[in-house]
Length: 261
Image (cartoon, rainbow, N blue to C red; front, top):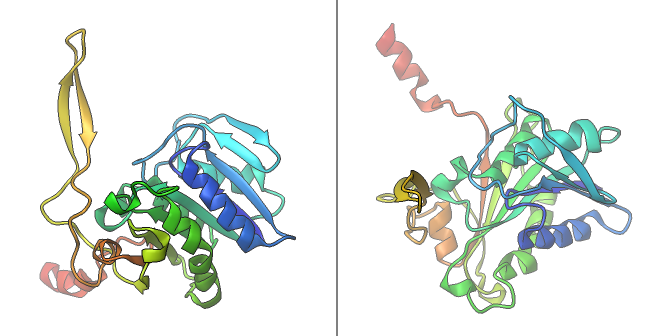
């Protein structure tokens, strides 16, 4: 198996090393693991692509490349340059430092890479590690992802639903903020929504008196509704959520058509 890995935390991120180990075990001794990851951190860029300017790419080692672009750019760079002679069988993105549950899905570069891979017709899984008090003091805060990642990826490859439609399914996996031995198992859940917490910005003055704005995230340890991702994660479960890039509110189409007729 040929696996492409990428992330949004950057080529030197510790979570990428965890994902590399997961990918090598999945690929097997005769497989290949290719890395094309951002040269610098690209957290929060979503599904952004560098449409208006070119990006530089550098080979750091065999099958290991850094691109000065977004995670989605990295997928495109892999498919149409680095791995153009033979496309990967699977794309893995992560392991993100911090959860990509609930509304974070819409901002995440980790998910943006998986989404682009799905739009390109490839199986894709995004993996993220929830951080919190339960991950502090561990040998690595990625312990749950490190010890359970292979099992989850294999389960999805063997028994997951992989559609071949235009907006094909890709998967969002979040590991809970607990030690590996405290993980309760895996739950298939919907994307949740954290009420009363939103992204915002905070003004700040530089020493020269100029005004800058810092983007701020909201509290991450407020549970979402029962049966959704963040609620499962905060209760010690690995969440698996099938996603599509189609943003149509299908449940409203008929009613809206009747109203506007």
